[in-house]
Image (cartoon, rainbow, N blue to C red; front, side, top):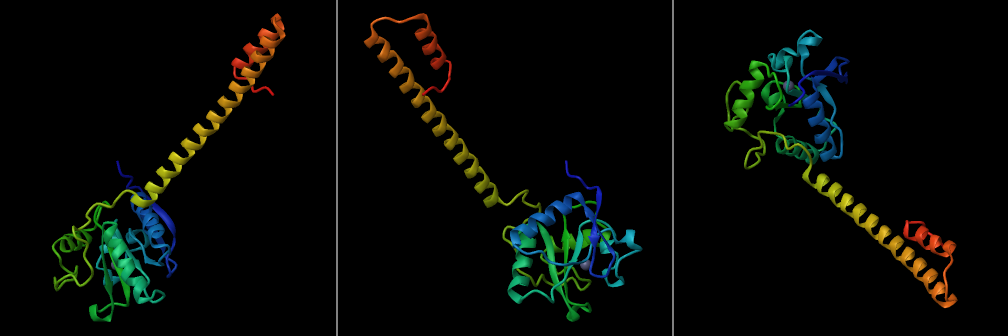
Amino acid sequence: MSDYSVQYRGTDSSGRGIYMTAYMADWWERVCSRLGFRPTIIQGAFMARNGGGASASAGYHDQAGCLDLRVWDLTADQQNRLIRVLREMGAAAWRRDSRHGMDPHIHLVLGADSPLASGAAYQWRQYLDGRNGLSNNGADYEWRPYPLVTTPPQEDPMASYADQLDDIQDGIDSILKNQAKAQRQNAAIRSKVTKLVKKGNATRADLEDILAALDNEETA
Ligand SMILES: [Zn+2]
């Protein structure tokens, strides 16, 4: 069950509170780790808690799922990659600028977050339909995953794969360590018994010594 409780995540570049659901915060961390850098959030979700979002946002940010990201400090390659990763991670994301009547930024809608404001839900449906999420309902002008990712992948599959390999390696190390220990014990017991055979008789203390060795005591 996803946790849609609203969290405060610091302040945006204008000093307003950044709010998002726990679900989206977790998603955002996965996005950043996949990117290898942390884009600056210039507007969070639940802007109603800050007294409403920017008027150009038309209420999209008043509830869950919407973030605006700074672009001026990113190279064109970083922006392309950011759009790609956001979309691969299950969000609609578009670069907006003066051509759309806005200051340059990336606007994203995480469709699986909840609850979306009606405008955000409409943009998400536009994204699914291959549209640009604007009032002119034009064609999507950004890179689109095929097939479209509508539910965020829960974790980076390669990171999870690497973790599993680490666990397997730890298991093998532990088995090899135990095996080496068992071989040393075996050799120690063998040497005690060999000495007793040479001696020709065994005292109670000798037998107790062997029992102790069998009971897992590492002896010299
Ligand atoms: Zn926005």
